[in-house]
Length: 312
Image (cartoon, rainbow, N blue to C red; front, side, top):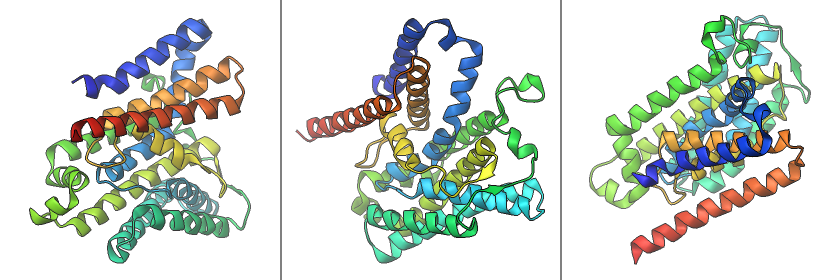
């Protein structure tokens, strides 16, 4: 119980620290909404990465997939497509990228790190090619309001993108807890050989995992477009590290078999709180990077130490 509440306790402690340090400007209702909005893209990507990491995999291409999705959405809007068509196409592109990763990993039987390191460059290159090496200015539509800090109607309180991310989080949590696929994901991450012996179709399940992960990353790309309002092939560069960090900080194990949706969301929120609080206090961005990196290293070290203690 303490382990599952750990990420939430850590988030609460960090939030309280900045409330005391930065004062009222930090815990104001406006800034709370700002932090929630800023965390959406990483949180959405972390939902897909949670599935991948629980299964014992990794996906380094998510930042490039996000960029590719934003470019596809912007290009379709520029060409006169409806916002609905552009939105679903951007998400579908993410799912196709995830399916490609899953197919390559299962067919070539190479470690996900190598495959997704390669597709990171492939998807980024595709985004650059579609955009003709420049930003795509898309016409203004309701997609631009998905991450608006002052949503319409006002009773939404927070941006529609926040509510959609929460809804997706509930769906992913139910998938992990209440479906055969969810149990197979944990089984593969805990012991792939044992899962195979027990009748789990490991290759097919991994294909599903990476496809679902890509679909959720495509949604993150749609949110990125809403935030930028343009299709930028250079967007989300390095964001794969933030997304992986959110899952690890939230209790996900890079060795597989462990991780929760609540933990991953708490990890994404914790990173958003830290960046927001430090920026508000005028701390240089390089210090923020050092602190975030240190937190990641600490989280991985704690996870490794815990596994060693279990083995002993």
